[in-house]
Amino acid sequence: MGPERDPGSGERRSPQPAPGRGLEAGSELGSSVEAGEKHAGRVSANGASAERSSAHKVEIEGLGVTFYSHRHSDGFEALRNINLSVGDGEFVSILGRSGCGKSTFFNTVAGLIEPTTGTVRCDGELIGGQPGHAGYMMQRDHLFPWRSVRDNVVVGLDVLGENKRASRRRADELFPRFGLSGFEDVYPEALSGGMRQRAALMRTMLLERPLLLLDEPFGALDAITRAEMQAWLLEIWSEFRRTVLFITHDVEEAVFLSDRVVVLGGPPGEVLVSAEVPIERPREYAEVVTSDEFTRVKHEILDVISR
Image (cartoon, rainbow, N blue to C red; front, side):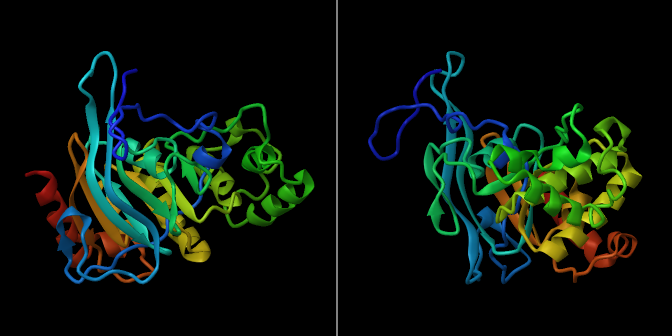
């Protein structure tokens, strides 16, 4: 892999995942991305806001990521000049076509990739390729088939060296809330798709990270189960009030779940628009998705995507 331009020194280097920290407990498992800027208008370009929240959980300024390889000796620009603030407790969806840089954006926010240009901060601390501040839940549940559900949901805590008895006590307290009571000692093959995703989210929540990165966690589910999981996720989010960044290709899913929807174009990935969702919470699925306000916001976003 070839070099990449260092914005400070002018030297060239390649963006690399943080050493020895690929898809492991503190990064892949999950936590929360807390809320961001509130918009004076309903839709604003480039993620900018006329009115900022007083408490930003995540602040991203001028973020760019370029990859160098033998195939792309001049560099492949994956992300360009992304500016975004996410407030404490906010639920923000990142929406865009395949290949626009959503996963690269998440990996950079998670600290798995070092930015080529710009900065990423969580609670004011510079991330710069250092993971551990966010829980990261992916589309696949990544449950180990040889471990019971109880042992799967505490695997991140085990990796971190937490007391095993205390970890399992904490997990047992949460099983009823995650709809898994009575399944603690079974193996993943006995769970439905929705139950496996709830177990994966529980594993993420047990890490108690302030920021949750959810990368299409319901993408593989059927439509009915997906709608049920979306409503359930909002209940869990309301109860634990973590900051969430949520990747999706589904406009309706993004509008139903979010305080704000950020649309990425590209490549290179750039913020096309940041749209506020002015629908009151709590949200009941059937009522919200058939409302005039939901339809209006959905059409605004689709109009941006189709340009």
